[in-house]
Amino acid sequence: MLRTWLTASFGLLASGAFAQQVDSLSFIRSKRMSDDDLAKKREGRFVTGLPDLSSDPVTGVGFGVKTNIIWNGNRDNPLFAYTPYLMRLRANAAYYTSNARELTLSLDVPYYKGTRWRYRLDFKAQQNPANLYFGSSEATLGRLRLPSNPGVTFATYAEYDAARKALRPGQPGEAAEVTDALSNRFRETEVMLNLKADYALGKGKWRVMGGYEIQHLSYATFQGTEADATRPVTGQQTTAPNGTALLRRDAQQGLIFGLDGGWVSIIQAALIHDTRDFEPDPTRGVYFEAANEFSSPVIGSQFSFNKLFFQGRAYRKLPVGKRTVLAGRVGVGNIFGEKAPFFEFQDQWSPDGSINALGGRQSLRGYRANRFLARSLAFANAELRIRLADVKLGKQNFGLGVAPFADAGTVRDRWQDLGFRDVRFSYGAGARIAWNLSTIIYADYGLSKEDRLFYFGIGQNF
Image: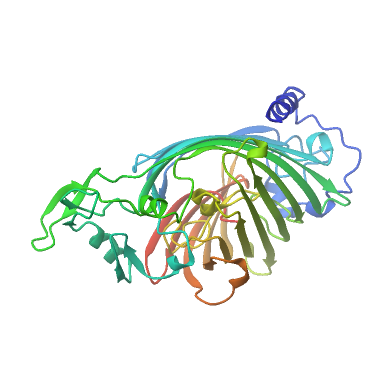
């Protein structure tokens, strides 16, 4: 299967994806861009490149480069007003102060040669030693606690962060004196290749998608690693071996599976309803998906699970200002499989871009990434995207705006128990810069009862 997908993908490139042969646009009429956005859309091929100056509370400050090569075609092309681009190639590389590093390549060809087919290819190689783990059940909805002393809880992340660095007597299997500074962290190393194709049905509002993903994962925890520590009585700064990590404790107790990593082979399928006018930054329309990932030894995987995710988004342009858009999203997901690996609890697969599970920039911006983790989750986001000004510098168009937002979500051990009990909320505001329409630069500041967090990078949240 992988060989077939690779052959088809490279054949697509060789045939010249941006040479259009359009018979009919009946399946794409609903996706016409607004007149204002269409007037700003650039013709031809161009490159957008940015230094990757990002910031995330978990991975730290990022340095690198984000590039897009975009083929838009000419304004007289019948597809010009209906597609975000004829073809886009992304190449991103980044290094973070947490010692995380990532390389991603992505090819996207919507409505290939004016047909109903869309092809996507994604490759990723990354290593991140700063992943957070607070547990994998609805008990994570409780207050923060140390893995070595779960009876003591903390109301804020600042209190928790200070407490986990305190020296404590070692427990069985640990050194005589240890710290918990790294006990909620683990390192993930991943290499991934994903290939997808979707087909527009009827008038194009509905699409069906199929895909295949293969990845290799490996994990490490930090027990025994020298880490920062504080002497409880004097407050003196020192170092000490880290105690047993929470992820390791849960694996030893049979609460999670997959810590040894391995090969993951996945078949993907989705049903999509999409009437957005401009995918990178919509002003109107809706997006709905029912997405499924299936993994089994039958298809070469070392793990067995089935993930189901439903997501709905809506966009409405308001009659206020230059470009004011009310945007909302609701998502619900569940993982089936008695021994589903813990790492699959950390994200929900979406054909439009995977979403990190509850906590962090993609779901709850006032909480750390993966703060709330369980087999089932539900979340909602709302943003008011207000364009304040449009600026043109040479051939470059920039739209400047702000975006106040509110997020909410919860997790459960069973999907039947999902509801409005124990919902966690966050809120905040952000700045937006739209560079040549397609490249969105964001800066968000999220607040919750537990934390205050800042995010900076590229791309709308949804």
